[in-house]
Length: 399
Ligand SMILES: *Cc1c(COP(=O)(O)O)cnc(C)c1O
Image (cartoon, rainbow, N blue to C red; front, side, top):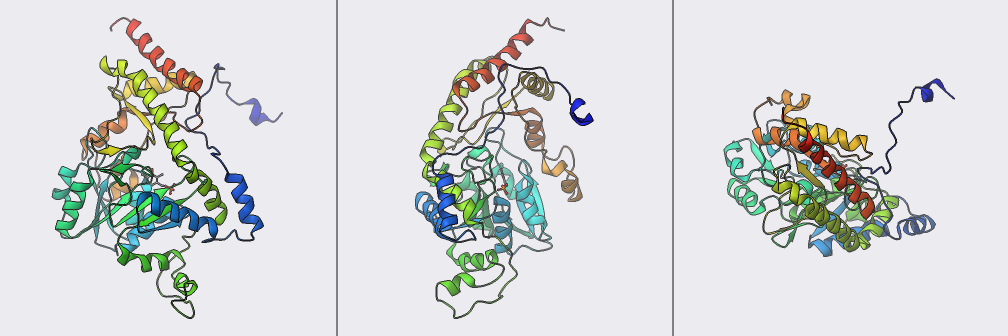
């Protein structure tokens, strides 16, 4: 035995352990990967990349979907397609993953962070207008938890002020706003198929190109700045370097895995909804007692039940509940450190207290395990541990 393993901390054994997430096989993933390999094409833009793109174009009514190696890559492409550069500003929430802001900052543009709504935790549309300056070029709304932003309001402001809209729909694949798929509403949308999302392929993403005028340049940026796609379509007689691009085409291995997941999208969606609704039903009594708050969606939206979070009354309760769950084998996790208070955000002028709702919810939010193959025993165990925690609190005499 090595010294290292002897020094390992012994955690108390719990009867069940429930991870936060568990990647899964939904159907024919391994079969399709074998097919891609035996067909002799595992580079990009082969059969499976096309099948995935067409599937999303049809199901989500998107004119053109371009698969990418990640949502981060799709957001980078989107920022380039908005022609962002030094001096430009982009309005976005601070309560988001770093990729939303990175896409903008890496071009020398400035993310301008706006607070979120208390109900959906999405960009507060009533605060957008006052953040617009003559340097504002775009709005990047983020559909947190697969719950739609108020896109009518966002689009109205953008159209009136001449701004581009890029939806960060990383978490919003197969969710909708007033009957329209998230990712299909702005000029551009970005999807993620990272292993923590609803439909997965390890690392993967897609750029939804809703403004047809952006398509040709999008294809060029994606393929190392060349017009190779036009060449393959016979539109030019040789392909060459025409723009500053990068390598944003995913491997067929990833696309083959993803296609099998998309084929099972309805099953995956139904299983997530069932678990989400079970959490709501079981935790509603605690919400009525004022112990926690459950997630909210806008009236006219369909969530994809990407994640289930609860808001605790304060940070101390959130941390104590998380520790209680962890000691009982359940991994429940926080979410974003607000970007405006991160070291990079501060370098853009962000300060504590700038965005009160964002800062408040970031301290009180806890995400519970929710994944396709979570069993009812596992979910029941998670709920029982939460109930147990609050029961213990009740018994403790008031200080
Ligand atoms: C997951 C996520 C991303 C990044 O997706 P990748 O595919 O991992 O690059 C970006 N934005 C949000 C809101 C996300 O949740």
